Length: 106
Image 1 (cartoon, helix red, strand yellow):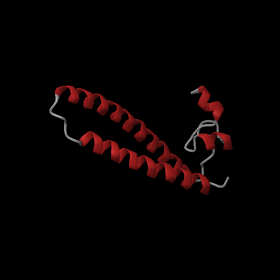
Image 2 (tube, rainbow, N blue to C red; image 1 turned 120 degrees about the vertical axis):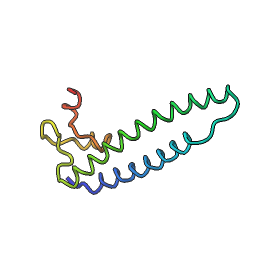
Image 3 (cartoon, rainbow, N blue to C red; image 1 turned 180 degrees about the vertical axis):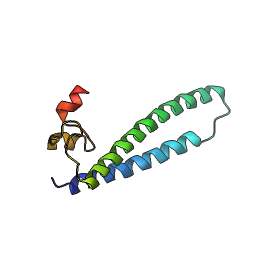
Image 4 (cartoon, rainbow, N blue to C red; image 1 turned 135 degrees about the vertical axis):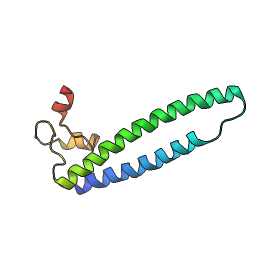
């Protein structure tokens, strides 16, 4: 399997997530409006941003693991059963560590 294509896809997504997480952290760090109603809205927004940040962090960890598998030469092989992960699955989820069958069992 030619992993160069997937490595580029993963690195592009990694850069995109780093940028997004930086913006989220900057938004959360902004000062609070003195108006109590506005503070409530800002608090709700911060909760949403925090959740988006957590999802982004999880995806970054999955990307790092996939890049590590590329380095080790195990990318595209299911971590559970050892069978190849289909091109269609990798096209949809390039950092997938499991084939479709094993992922559906988890």
